[in-house]
Amino acid sequence: MRVLLWHVHGGYTDAFVRGAHEYLLPVGDEPDAAGIGLAGREWPAAREVRTADLRDEQIDVVVLQRPGEREAVRRLTGRVPGRDLPAVYLEHNTPKPDATGTVHPLADQDEIPIVHVTHFNRVFWDNGRARTIVVQHGVPDPGHRYTGDLGRIGVCVNEPVRRWRIVGADLLPAFARVAPVDVYGMAAEGLPSALGVAPDRVAPAGDLPPGELHARLARRRVYLHPFRWTSLGLSLLEAMHLGMPVVALAATEAARAVPGDAGVVSNDLDELERATARFIADPALAAETGRRARRHARERYGLDRFLARWDEVLGEVVASARRPDVALASPHPQQERSTR
Image: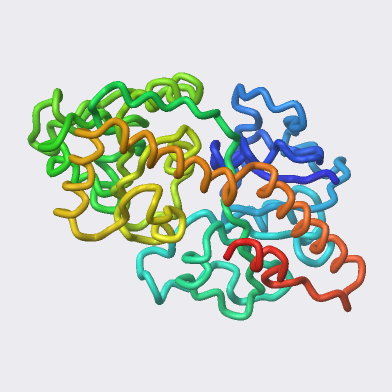
């Protein structure tokens, strides 16, 4: 199939375009649907398409990710998503500003199913009468690269100063009392000053390419996931794939993603600090816990499983468009059995 989607979420797109289809990534400054194309990425199955040329492209299905894209697709292709063009809406985020009362932008229709990236998101969004599906995250396996030879804590978060309590930036000083915290991601330079801590205790470590990030992160003894209100972070799954033990807040999907033998998940900060201290003090415990984290991550969040599930969803959406009497499974029974 030829799949149209905008390059909105770099990590997610990196996994998504590794499937067996041809992926069209728009380039242009369309209102509410600006496109950056490949943005320098090497994705053999994907190609850039100028938004002005979309009307001439053969498109089998579109994966919408922002509210404005539905109208942009109609304007740019002459086809209405969900009516003339098979479509799904991929929802990456937790509902904001209200955790339980926020109505999804596509809640008022039933032509375009909403694909949530976690079961948590599906439950907390008010989806109205829209059909909903869950496709759990999948990430390319970076390999078991964990050494943990540095008694330091690794964290991955973009814009921690701006996003602050949402990503748990305010919690970092408590963990910095246990061991130095290295914070990877965009715009972390002002974090020590914002926290009022020394930069040798909470250290901005840069926004690195994936290969370099994995190599450096894997040397840290433990991975910390302090996020309060965000979809399950791909960096958490990557850390588990690397073989890192995990310490995480029991928020959103983390409690489901991290089993008890792969780390410690709790909202008791004292418990999390103690768990971090145990991993720092016991490299053998940290390594064994990380091995179990990797085994679980590969089983539940492996790339092959992720792509196979997307093949099912896209195939069902296209089939239901061709035959309106075909009901789209929501969620797919086999997927649900296999994830319990």
